Image (cartoon, rainbow, N blue to C red; front, side, top):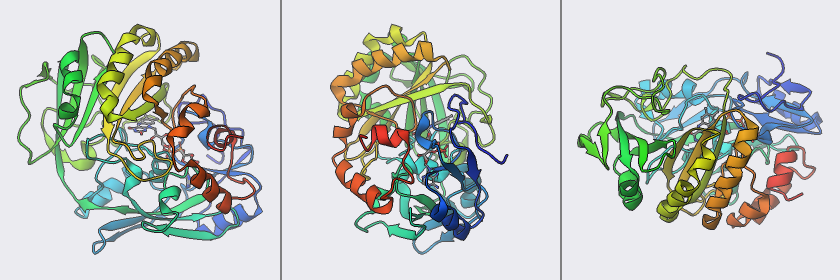
Length: 417
Ligand SMILES: Cc1cc2nc3c(=O)[nH]c(=O)nc-3n(C[C@H](O)[C@H](O)[C@H](O)COP(=O)(O)OP(=O)(O)OC[C@H]3O[C@@H](n4cnc5c(N)ncnc54)[C@H](O)[C@@H]3O)c2cc1C
């Protein structure tokens, strides 16, 4: 493929006329110096126009591969073309792990970090929080290095591609660990709402899947450390699933990570989908909103009250928790959060009214929308929830004064143009 034309869900046709595939950082610097408009792209998994540009798209998939483990600092330095699927098995074989993962392993790490992609766990921060250092090519073509503790570091990590093109990431490591995944069906909605924090804290990573159907929450997926006490037979009114399950109740579970309490490596349990299971094109839409975790019960009741308005568009919803971080444009900045995720039919006529109802229901809780998913909220509804926004804008302008890396999404949603 010599041109990237669409996002993964294939509903955004990129305006960019050409795609650059630099093989070295020097080649990338040359491309940046001569271009007037550019956008970096990862695995194309975002559901909005965040990666589009009328200029050129830059993909780092051909960049020289780097996986350098530093056992003294417990970090790994990787090239920005790499995906979790490519990195995780290598780390595991070397005795190391990342602390958490998103639902699938197919994102580039840089694309996930740039949008504050997350997994779950009351004490687990999002995936951007594992970045210890990064290097990027700014609009002048210069290579900039920032490490944790540097003044601008917290602004640059969740960068939305607005500061430049990240070439290298250094990530924190933990010793490899094993995880056991147990699924429960048919939890009691009132018990879930009443003890939300305890429920979500009952394993290393917990996801709730539901179709928002009245008095039941369809499923809980508990990803517990292998040496933690075994999970109970009954869980908040739910019963242990008799067989492997799909996140969408009743669907074929093929391609999901191992369940039924069978212990496996961290990277083959923390995601929901196995390496190699996700197709090249995805026929779905996604949205997600983050609110402070102390609002979780009230927000769940608010969604419950409008659930029939979601049903015409809804495939499945997921509820996860994410610990607070200090990254300026992180959707979890300064706040232990709950994320309300929705996988939709790829039918905008059905999704749009569902989104409008959902955003109205969540408005009292001042939600932050996921940067990489679909939302209707105008920027004035969520930008005030980013106290370091002015600092981020100034940082981006310093590295990109002419707006080389800006696009319509950033102008609309971040820079207020
Ligand atoms: C099936 C599916 C499951 C998902 N599950 C989750 C989930 O569990 N949790 C969650 O939070 N999100 C989830 N998402 C959303 C996804 O994590 C984000 O959209 C993420 O940004 C995708 O990474 P990507 O590599 O595809 O990046 P892209 O979508 O290609 O790009 C995303 C952003 O990163 C920037 N970027 C890319 N490369 C660079 C670079 N080299 N330098 C600077 N900026 C760069 C782009 O400019 C863009 O702004 C899911 C999406 C899909 C399709």
